[in-house]
Image (cartoon, rainbow, N blue to C red; front, side, top):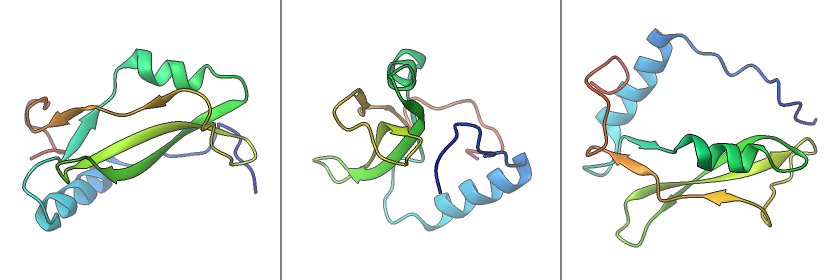
Length: 104
């Protein structure tokens, strides 16, 4: 199977709220519930030749806090590891949205 860049990732707010609430209720640490990547970082990944989407890897930083690494993905499902990567997102809490169904 291959990626097209047009995969359906839609989710209702009710289902998304249930997923994020379950995460907050069961996470083994006290902090990060979300991370923000700026548009420029995401576009730098997406605008690479052969990129049809972004894969997000879960990791831990040097303080053992969750951290997402973003990398472009090709149609054949390979990562563009020699291209643009993104990490060091703005963490929530600290850089959070006002309370809403996804974070409260």
